[in-house]
Image 1 (cartoon, rainbow, N blue to C red):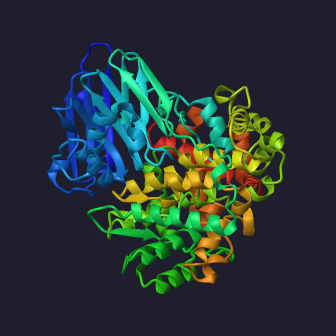
Image 2: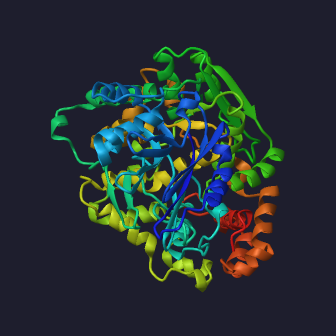
Image 3: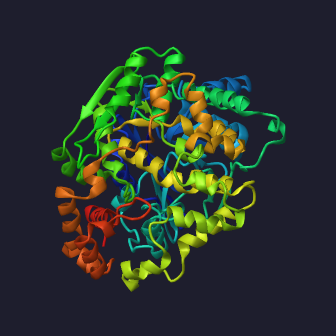
Length: 594
């Protein structure tokens, strides 16, 4: 788990090593244990290291195998590297280290561009094939690890975070109107390949991009579940699916134990993280370190779920850390979390993850977490009603349930200079929902949630906040085999029992009933959810700042109306509209954009 950066030149000039060094310096929190720079002709690679697997210098990056003609930087973890190493050794390859980095290099030497299909894990890879004169960029199947790109004539830069590319300089920082439309429509989500800035893009999940030394490039998507019923599984009943999902989840949890350092769990007290603790205990993990966080309550709304996390910790005898924070801890943390955001993220629990990661990183370098279960197993409230919607009506129904704003409202919100003339968000949703595959309307929605929305909401949120403290977070519910199996599972098994039905049936075999049958909870941060007190002052200050007025992104009348009417500020879909606008301005100002 690390931070990667680099520059490729296609115009005969040498890559700017100083720019790569500046990018690597910006990535230091992601990799506090070491750094490296490698000049490879038309490509220069940079790396910041977090030591998790093979702690020796033999696994340092950038890694070069001159005998293979290959150089590599990589961020993430390949969980099946021991098995791949044995397979490659049997094929005659030799290794100089014991970690997963060299396995990626040798896998490419063995299988070429299809190497990525053999990797099980989370990763962003930049590999230079010196003999072919190619730069190979790859991102894992669910987009758990990020890879940002900034292209100019004759040059390509890449990095693990957007701010790192800003540090290199010479980036078009104009606001992308289509991305802004997405941000204001989808709870601050801007899906790949766009970012909020016109000059920076991101490699989509499950994508391999090959760049030639002359600047030509090509991309292919190497993995895409169909979300159709598998003829081989037509005879499976509810019990069979429970067994299959349970087995796949157990495998996913065990896979994510591979490390040369201890592995903990972020235990919210919800079903998903509690299942991870239970299955790790079942697998023989004793005195597991678990971590929960809570905040001050507000107007009868609880700020923690300690009742449930304490119950799980006691049941499985974990070494539990309960972290209690007050509102006085929140405002400084908001500013630090915004600085750590690789893109603006409006979810109120971003700050909670930032504070939690700070505490967890004092004890462990690696933790498992429950992100992704709701998207994969139909756990959100809007999933159940969409199960009965005809396929041809699903786009409209999804928009009614999920969107923060209709396109017509955008003219009230955004200054015409930043306006998007077409309903870009609705168009993108319609295209994804109408794509081939997906037997039912809900299959199409779960495919969209898992492969378009999820990488740029909870996944990006957890990666940014955890890596700001050098903490590697692994997500078993986003295991590629588990996701593919769930995609083939009939939707009725997932929507049962108010959502995640098949998962709840698995959970009842390992968890106390009180944890399984509890009301669905979210990461509670009342002060941020309600945008009141000092948080409201911070938002107001950001929207009134000279930089905001000079930028003129939002119409003043709309901003003033939100400030005057707290009820209007709360979107129907649950996203706070005032926080959404203020957070974007605060992020732009923090990173000195515009």
